Amino acid sequence: MSAFSLFAILILWHVTFTFSVRPTMKMLEGDQRTSMKEKPRRSLGSDSSCRTGNPIDDCWRCDPDWETNRKILADCAIGFGRNAIGGRDGEIYVVSYPNDDDPMNPKPGTLRHAVIQEDPLWIIFDRDMIIRLKQELVMNSYKTIDGRGFNIQIASGPCITIENVTNIIIHGIYVHECMPATKGLVRVTPQVYELRSGSDGDGISVFASRDVWIDHCTLASCHDGLIDVIYGSTAITISNNYMLSHNEVMLMGHSDDFLPDKSMQVTIAFNYFGEGLVQRMPRCRHGYFHIVNNVYTGWKMYAIGGSANPTINSQGNVFVASDSNFTKEVTKRDSQLGYSEWKKWNWRSEGDLLLNGAFFRASGQDTPSSYTKASSMVARPASLLTTIIPSSGVLSCQKGSQC
Image (tube, rainbow, N blue to C red; front, side, top):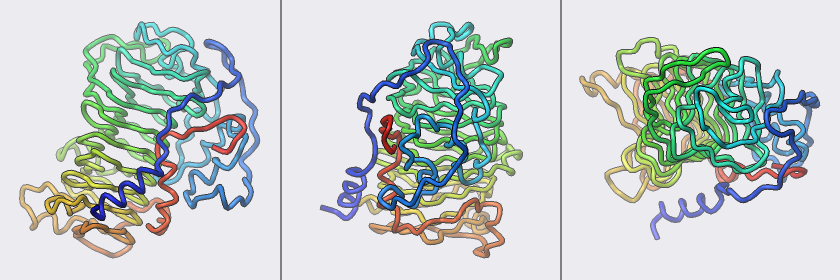
């Protein structure tokens, strides 16, 4: 058995990817909301068997009362999206219906009705759900979608659009088989609806938005990208996600000619890029990208790519190349002028673990000051990732137990 196969099997055996039936939680029904009093953020003790070295998970997962203290999650973000508070300062909204019968007039108690509200909301669910949307789910600002405790899937239709908003948290959702949306009327606030021109079939699309955190989701097999961040979006963290079975995984930046993306800052941390991925993990244009403490296994073309002079700071990642001699390189640059142009782009690999012949082609400056705008957190040693990666993707959280 090859070195790639042995390592990949070990990682896959550990990865959390369980969608079993969870115990039901006692919730309000329908559209009822309640203010949930929570304890202030506090020390969760020093249980070494619970802690992994992942600063996000160590912030909240050791608490057996995570269900009561859900909103503590909002204090646990890291990276460029660390200020995303989602619906922390609002009420709890319980989704009780998986239906999406009328995107123009969403029924109270549905996910669409929740995300369009003007007030901050922390959105949770009262049972397992597979939500098949008829149109893209257009979110309003200051919302958290929190799937913990149940098997929540958004699948087999248009998926999530985060456009011209701020302070969004998406946590614990399985997003897969997303399809393009057709032209149609969609409610975007309680007072406003829009004629939408359709969507590309991304899992999660982030347009012209800031303070966004996507954490502990599993994403697979969408029509276009799994996560796209474009049109000047910034202050984004993509963390602890499990991505698999997809071609063009993540696009950062709209086009080479769209200059507002020069201010983009994105952290990609503690993700597991698993089986069946081809390219764009991510593909970057302009902007500043901190790619830190992720595991990559067997990309079919390349892992990290870019054009238009993005700054890429790769730290503490594990890159396991496939056995093919044609896919050993981690990086890929698109440049009309070739090496004479991209040799000036600041791309570095620091503390990465490159296995089975994988190699990272660095370029540009290697001085710390060159990567200041692409540095958002302290990288953990790559050797720790064999214990961190088992927590990637949707978690199986049960009431009364550590998650």
